[in-house]
Image (cartoon, rainbow, N blue to C red; front, side):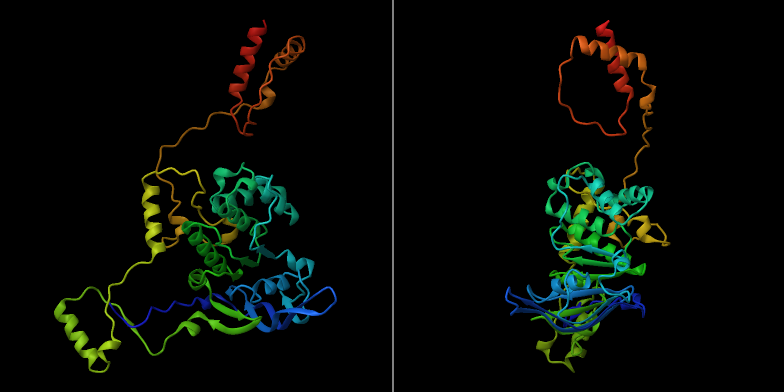
Amino acid sequence: MIAAEPAQPSSVGTRSSGEVVVSITGLTKVFKDFWGRPKARAVDNVDFQVRRGEVFGLLGPNGSGKSTTVKLMLGLLYPTKGHIEVFGHSPRHVATKSRIGYLPEESYLYRYLDSRETLEFFGNLFCLPKSDRANRTEQLLEMVGLSQTRTRAVGEFSKGMQRRIGLAQALINDPDLIILDEPTSGLDPIGCREVKDLIVALARRGKTVILSSHLLSDVEDVCDRVVIYYGGKVQAMGTLKELLATPDAIRITTPALSRETMERVLQTIRQDVAEDKVQVDTPTQNLESYFLAVVQRAQQAAAQTSGAMSGATVAAYLRGNEESGPAPDKILERLAMPQAAAPVAAAPIQPAETVDRQKLDALTRAAESAPLPVRTTAVPEPAADLNKANEKLSALLGKQE
């Protein structure tokens, strides 16, 4: 390969439409001390717009004003000066808030609720019907790879697993605007890739995503346009193709060439370009691609893990009318393809009402005369096989007789 500069990322700006979702004009936020004196100018006269179907990146060093801008868009802070519109309304408009999904930089969750209860709780805040809450909860847990840990308390989760459940709660209401603040923080490389694939899938469906991240490689992979803050001001803004293009260098990629052909090509190039300006090297894959290939081989070999699993397909209600078949270039679908296995017949579940009422009464009378020893046991799953309970019940009655 003959290369002068790194390849430029391809912009996916064709996804966006002309409809403006977020409009910010002259936005300024000045924090004041107890006496009302200016303490910090966090955002200083910022202007930009975000359109429907666009992935918009907020970049900048710590303290540059990104999080303050996000809080102003959510109506959590009041601007000192300027104007903000979200879906044509004030950020504090209640109906507008129901169309927004937000993943904060730190996951604030009730630590004693399990995964399913957490999503049920947030779904109830949006007044979702019970059937929709249950359906979306199952789809989201499968999507973020937490279906095997649905009964564990969220407080026991690692940071990466908390980010996964936090992402699920941000999508429970099927929002039209998703604001993600450091969504890949604490995630393993598989989780990072899945989040990026999910963001692209949401934008393809027409959702608007605002992404604030310090991981520039993630932003480069998914964002259509970015704005770069410094000192509360916008220092640069535009599409990635516009910002990253290097017009004074080109890259040529070919299959492996023979030595004679390579010499002829270099001789032709050196007629117009100085020899020290030409670089010849062998292309390599990035570490993320290599890592994912190693994990995929391990999964195909049926290796076991007690941690978070690779997510399955994007939740059906988030895909909308798109086809549900797995895309070959999406790690979200590829890594979690189940291996072929013989179907296992489910054991019949006997309803609790079929337990003999006379046996229960007899057992109660026996327990009153000779109390049985108490032993602490784990609470069984709701779908446990009650046939075993009946067998134990019969055995206990036989001993009493």
